Length: 491
Image (cartoon, rainbow, N blue to C red; front, side):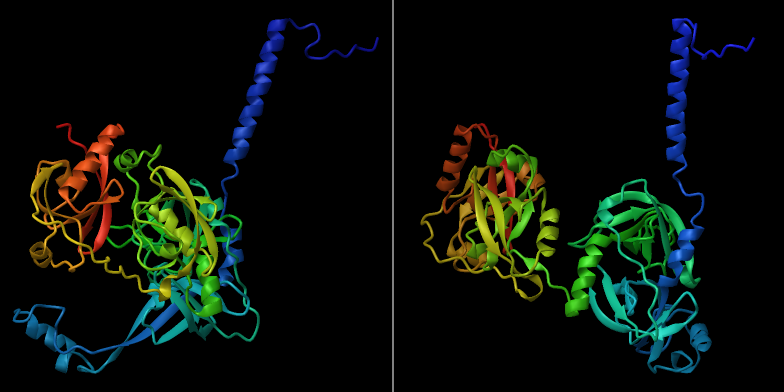
């Protein structure tokens, strides 16, 4: 007889069926995990081969003044002074004090077939001559199109007889912590070199206003500056700019300016030869939790306007003490974000700015100016009378006195300055901890002008009646304003 075919589960008991189902599920999950693990590249060779022709070495030459003697090498009068003088030659060097040429090395990458090249501003800054070396060994002289010191980006141009291989920018916002990346450049003058790692962190800020760095552990050394950081698709998601290192070499903490910042800069440099950033015309500071409490805000977010000089914001009716919570339809979380959004907005565009003013939301229509060409000056306040017979009082750890002609002269203030002068600060008080010092001037309390101590006492009483634990003060020092929230005393 022909044997009867039976399935593995036919006639099996329920316990066996459960065991088989469990094993199957485990195998499916294991295969899924293995598939994800296998997504890590086994090699970067194909990617490196594909993008290498677009990456360049940059050599700059600069004429610098000559030096006489061993200055900068040994102190004057040192017993080694004669030795170094002889070592350098007559008159302090082979050429004496004549000017000499100094060379520097960096990296860059081609972004268009007609020869536009991106690098760092610090790579070519002050250079008289810029030479581009391609992967093939071919060299071309480059002309500087424009620079942006704020983001440390420069755009160069070479003239080639045939279209050049180039790379495209990717969307840096799509990169995630843990993604594989590859850096390429000319580290320490060693020539074309590749290093790989992962995205270690996002949205890093170093010292610039418009900073948006990708942190990576891919090895970046001197000479890598201006080179590209690639994702696995071969798109440039960053420009290698800086490293954090105690010894000058890579320790796995490198920073690349995000491509979404670079592309906007490159487009403007290509079109105008300079950057053109939007300008709102306000001085701002972050909203702290105690400031939020003093203002009755639910969350410590937004950008507090500490001053409104003459400009677009003033024309639109913005006031000191407003908290900007939305700009052009984008929620504002802090000052850094607002500065970046405004800077990336087209000059002359009219945008809706939502502010929180005295607990109410208002929408202002602001036509942006241009930051690069606007001198931001704070106009003198309109002249107002000064209260007579000032009385010194101690409040919230501060010794305060209304401004008089004598105090204005002593503090170097304009004749039109108004407010309460801080004549002393208790070192043990919260006010001292938050940076208030003798010579500061309090011009507002609770977002209202204060000309006398009685005005301040009234605002303290109002805050207590409203159930608030702190009071927001506008403090000026040398003309620079900032808001400080101080805890209200119970006495």
